[in-house]
Image (spheres, rainbow, N blue to C red):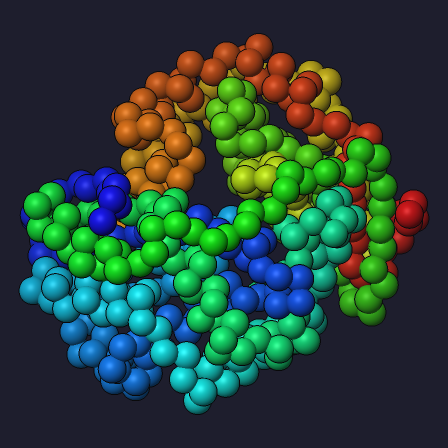
Length: 408
C-alpha cells in the first residue's frame, strides 16, 4: 500500500493501539461549507459497507473496540484500540469506515443536529466568543479564523454528496502517517495496513491554505456582554514547529505562562494580585503559521489592571528573559515529566504520530530531553527578544471591562 508506519512492540498485555492522520483538515473546508471535515469525523463510524449505523456500532460495542475520528485545522486524525483477539475484525471495520462510508440519511441528520446544538452552545460561551474574535482580529479572513466545527448556517447546507466528495479527496495514502503500539509484530501489521489503507486513493485532492498574514499592530477589542467577568484572550504571531529556535521558545513559554503555578503569568496575575483564578500562555504552531496565545478572566472592575499586568509580564520577559533559577527549574520539570507521555500504549502511539507529523525524525523521542537540557540562558533570552512583541499584542475582551478602552 506504500503506507509507512512506526511500530513499538509490547507483548506484555493483549492490546493494540493505533493513531493515524491524513494531510488536510478544517482549514481546507470550502468557505460556504465550514465544518465539513468535522462533520465527516462524526459520520465515518455511522455505517459502512453493508453495515448500517446500528450494525456498525453494535460490532464495535460487542468487541470492545474503540474507534474515533477528529478534524484538526491541518490534519484529519483517527484512533483505533482493540484487544489482540479482535484485531483482524477491528482493522476490517476501520477499513470499511474509511473506504466505504454510507452517509445514510437518518444518522446524518442525527449527527448534524448534535453538531448544531454544540455550535449554539459554544456561541453562549464568553471564552469561545473571545477566542474566535481574537483569531479574526489577528489573521483576518484566513481559513484558520473560521470555527472548525462550522456555523449553524454552513452545517445546515452540508449534504451526503459533500461528505462523500471530501472523503474521496481527503482519505488518501499521500500524506498518511500511522503509529502503532502493542501486541503485534511488523509482518502482521504490514498485512493489516495493506488491507486497511490499500483500497484508498493514492493521491490527495486537498488544497491546503496559504501562509498566514499576521496583524502587526497591537490593540484592544471589546465584545460587550452582560456577564460579571471579563474573559480576556491575548497574543500575537508565534513560531513554527520546524524553526531552529522552537525548543528554546518552548522552554521560554513554559516559564512565561505554561508552567502552572511556577509560571510568571500565574505568579503575577493570581498569586501576587488575586486578579484571576488562572492565566496562561501557549505556543500553537500550525502548518501555515505559528501563534503565541494566552487567556485569563477577571472581575470586570479589574480588567484594565489585568491587561496591564499581562502586557508588563510579557514585556519584561522580552527585555530581560528569565533567570537562571527559572530556567533550571523549567528544564528539570520538562525533562522529568516527559516520561509521563508514554505510560500507555495509546499515549505512546500519540507521541509517535506527533513526531512523524512534525518531521522530527525517529530518534527525536530518545534525544528530546538532551535538546531541552542543552538550552542555555542566552538561548532563551535571545528567543524571547525575537518572538515576544508587547507592542503587537492583540487583546480581545468579552464582558463589561472597566479601566480599558477599545483601540480598534
